[in-house]
Amino acid sequence: MIMMEKIKQILVNKFGFTNFKPGQEEVVNHLLNQKDTLAILPTATGKSLTYQLTSYCLPGVTLVVSPLISLMEDQVQQLAKIGEKNAVAINSLMDFHQRKFVLKHIKRFKFIFVSPELLANQEVLTILEGLSISLLVVDEAHCISQWGNDFRPDYLNLRTVKNRLNHPLTLALTATATSPVIKDIEKQLFGNEFEVVTLPIDRENIFLSVVNTEDKLNYLIDFLNHHHGPGIIYFSSKAEAESIASELNRLTSLKIGIYHGDVLPEDRIKIQQQFLKSSLQILCATNAFGMGINKADIRFVIHYHLPDSLENYVQEFGRAGRDGLQSVSIILYQEGDERIHRFLHDDTFQQKSELLSLKHKTRQEMKTIYPNLSNLQKKWLVQIANTDWDWDNFEKQLQNRKTNHFQNIVKMMDYIRLTTCRRNFILEAFDNQNIKTEEKKQCCDLCNNELPDLTEVQKVNDNEENLKTAEQIIRNLFLL
Image (tube, rainbow, N blue to C red):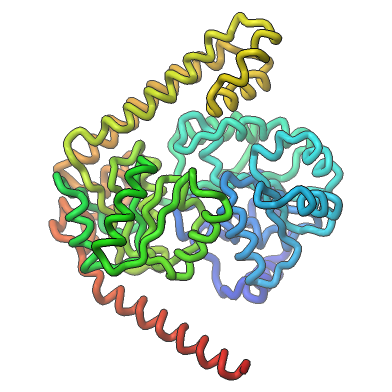
């Protein structure tokens, strides 16, 4: 066991912190005792530090499985800021020659970030088998569960990957996880004894509000005239995200960007960096944006459309107020908004259901049909093949997902129609009902009625930005 004195020394010298945040030390201790660990730590509690610090106490490589290119790139940049030169993200932003070079020199890296999809590449997996992997990190681990928001089928292969990599010490990280999600993570990733570190999900500096309005655009214009961010506006529709962003750019003086799955990967990285550096004040985005974003001063998160689950909602509004200062979460609701999720889910469900017609097809017949399938159908067909064509299990999962989706929308509508404290509703949903909210000064619209004033907080942010600008100007003068 590594002495605590050495751990604290690394914390100070490498990361610049004198103390751990709640939950961090417990996770690090479990890992250094060689115990697989699931860490359920809310946004802003420093999940990344738990594996980064642990890695510096272990001799081998840390392999991080991450669902988004932007998240990987952000983590590599964060490591670079603390002087770590041996970190790399292997993803589609690399061209053929870059990837070939990295894979050839893979042993030089301490931190390797990959997507779960990349681990399905046998060449890559064979190369990783040749490394001494001391720690396997599964970031955004809720993606492994069919009950979790952002379910990613390729996460289901991680159990096989662990076996191929000789069962390395494993850390699973997520900001939220209900009991069914935890059971799925246990089944799909651990399958034996493991430790669970959980912190309450309550973020008392975030005021919760639901606004019933027939004119969402005018509400946004009025809100942004008084609150200039930084902020995120979430949409369920890519087209509407672009349309509203265009209108807001035309009707306000703010710099507003667009982020969704159809934006080219290199442009997504650029937009993310502009937002992180406050070159963009507002992002109109789908839920493709946000995982692991390290921006402390986001003052508000607005949902233009109804979130598709309470888990997604908590993940997304939790990106506000990481600096601990007053922030707000607003859902703009119009009667019937829940229909968009029924439409989107029905379309997805129909595509997956159509795959069942291939159940009794020969492999040759499937090869003929395959080019005509949608990308979603092709992806799921690969997953069915990986389960040795277990069609019965696929059909069962399909029905489970349909039931789960319906329950998620019902729960969100219960939240919208509440007449009692919104915060208590969320805490009870995540088994945190023992937390008292009565003494919170800024809780929710049902307890306090009015949005808190963000003006003073924005002045603090503006002063800090002005100071940074002045310091940069002075630094440039000396460089000249």
